[in-house]
Amino acid sequence: MLPRKAGFLALTLICFFLVACSTTAVSPTAQPDAPQPTNTAPPPATQAIEPTPNPTDTPVPEPTTPPTNVPANKFNSELARQIMERGVIRIGTRPNSLPPFVIVEGGYSGFEVELAEAMVEWMFDDQVAIEWVGLSSGERFSALEQDQVDLLVRTVVHTISRNQVALWSDPYFIGGVRMLVREDGGITAFEDLDGKLVSVIESSAVQELVRAQAATSGVEVVEVPFETGGEALAAFLEGQADAYFDDWILLLIKTAEDPSLQVAGDFLQRQPFAVGVRPGEHEFRNDINQALRAILEDGTYDTIYGSWFDEPHPWTLEEMLDEPPMDV
Image (cartoon, rainbow, N blue to C red; front, side, top):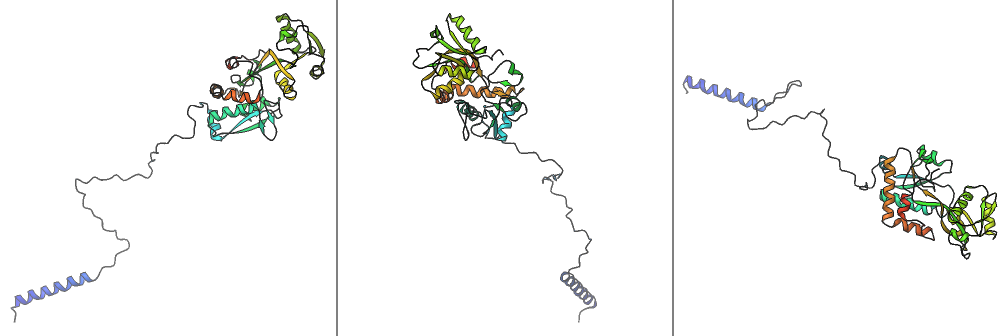
């Protein structure tokens, strides 16, 4: 039998053991609104505390990569950039054929068409399509002013008076009044007209040009006057005159129709053709000039010219670029 003190101590140990076992076996029911225990111990002194990001802070954007499809150093104007984004350049041209400049037959072709295509290709590296817009003479400048077209490439002569309605590129062609003769007639220059018959339109600007050139050259020209250009041309074609003067473009049409005819002599009047852009678009006009000069330098211009004209151009490319506007 244990001593009393030892028995009490044993009883105490047994009770303590039973309580401890009961606490481990039964988990208390958590209260729904009781806060969850948190670790309030401070972090070690050597541990860096990361700042909590503020969701309202504006993120710093990543650096933007420059677009890779913009041709380098090909244009500088805002209008050219807009055309690049649009993917289309609108070019005003003739609504009807005027070969060899424009031929409208199931599409557009001709000297001016290929010239414009070459300039657009150089500027935009085949990333911009051309929309051809046929414009009558009365529509061409209003269409440019009202932003219906971006360019005019339409056998338009640059005159001083037209500086009010458009900005003009360097000339890309020189037209003017020249002489139509028969290939076997022995006439190659104005001086060969001494004593020859020339059909003219009475009281016309061309008649005045013929008379002025005759006086300057000391050549005696025998005029055969008619009331209209159609009558004067028909008389020449029927053999009533040895020569006929008119706009070179119109004479080229006749030589294409009849190989026995040819254009001869120098210009009695020079008419520079230029690309028209909207007033105020000086940088865009400079872009056009840059493209024109580029295709002149690399030979593209002469290739296009030679595919549409049988004879070499009667002026140098330097003369063409420096040709001033007509004083009218």
